[in-house]
Length: 126
View 1 (cartoon, rainbow, N blue to C red):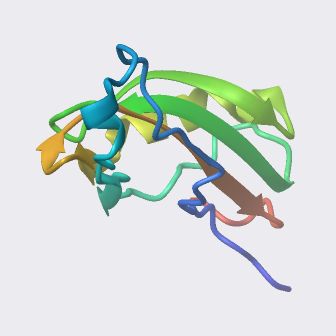
View 2: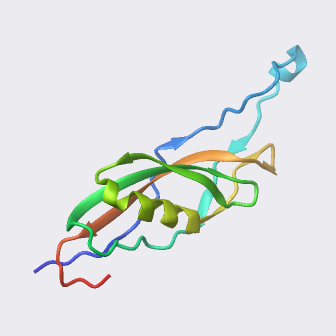
């Protein structure tokens, strides 16, 4: 019998790098901003909720990575089963990132990750 544990994956499904700004002047238009996306440095595994149905489920959670690399304001944007939504938001808040930067300075960056839950056996205690 094959038993799979709950696991998490960082899949960047959405990373917005454009931010609201004042219209560029002619001299600013020639300068291209250098933007980097956040990089996960801590991504604890998701915990399969007690009593959850067995199977494979994915929950996409959107949040903003702040200038210190901390996820803020998580929201479920897509879910295979709403039973896993709260667990996915809690898991996303435990992640830590090297923050995204613009011109070398840390900036808030919107990001979406997909958290995968996979449990095929009721005998798996995780």
